[in-house]
Length: 151
Image (tube, rainbow, N blue to C red; front, side, top):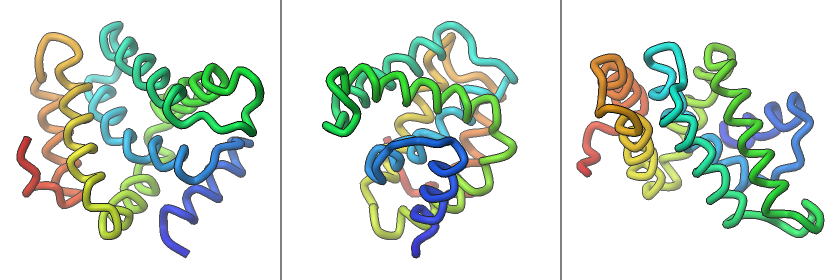
């Protein structure tokens, strides 16, 4: 069982989530961006708008029939709730998410660029990339072995 599958099982069981693996993988891929957004200790208004926008996009894109009649809205609310949970509980989940993501990259090369892009998207959501955000991006880039990704 891959690290992402183990994390999927642990996280969805603990959080009582009814997401499929693909829907969950997007949360994992966005985790570094949340870490960047929290680099200064708070999520400001512009960053939260970005979080909500991503939740809506993912809700529209990945809703499945098992989520009910208002599936897009339901998935958007699930994503928003999980993004909020992860932002509040970064310390608890960080090592597990980063380990799973690093392992996931070995089978999904295209996710590497997506992760770097979203880190910079969140960093630039408010007044450009701050020193704290840049430090976190450098740390995560090293941890996830993304140094070769050029945007």
